[in-house]
Length: 330
Image (cartoon, rainbow, N blue to C red):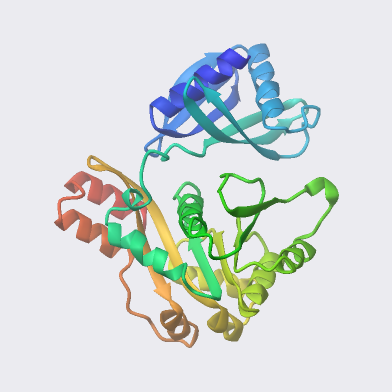
């Protein structure tokens, strides 16, 4: 199984894939990969071989092999030759004793510098300036696979390299090992809720707190409180646009006054795959724009659609690529 798993993962890395999907089909097992946003078939497996592969992947990701009823997620790192593979393994139960696995390749953009992740280097430099804030909440938003975590951890790594501030992250699971960052992994078995965990982190004197993802009202409230207590807080969130992030947070029961006071920046981003390469494109609203929106006004800012138009005019997108992404991101 080790050889089969490594073969599938190395092929995915070599082709620039972001994810590997291992699923059950009527005739057996299917292995597919997502390359430049689109799914591509890799190979078929016999059902028995598929089950053994799933068990092996759960084993190396330190998941419970005997648990088939609830979703699990874990992370592992290993070498295939000279290639360092950092992967996140997530399971989804289908029926009793049958589940699927999705593998996220965490360092498939490791060869790129942080600035090269973006169409314009100034886009990264702008975000890096916000890492100098002493307090506030910065949210990276967008759909799954838009590079939110990648950007957040690149910013954290560059800030941590200066070794002038204490950075503590709370993750489920830890996805990237970062030098000079204290990384705490959520332990579901310890039945530790987010509130006490965040308060425990604050007792360890952090300057910057990273939280993997805002998933519910409790987390949102705790992170807002943390940002108001003299800490810079950075997290990710799923939303369709920068302004719709505020709507979703209001749906959580958060008050506009505390959002106005705490949120410093909301970035909503997408990943573009073009002939010239793959780039992150984003729109943002800052504290002033956030206050305007929450008070019923309409802040003026460049949307992702505007950014696509600029790229198209500059030759960064072909006519077909522009039409496709402009339609897809509506």
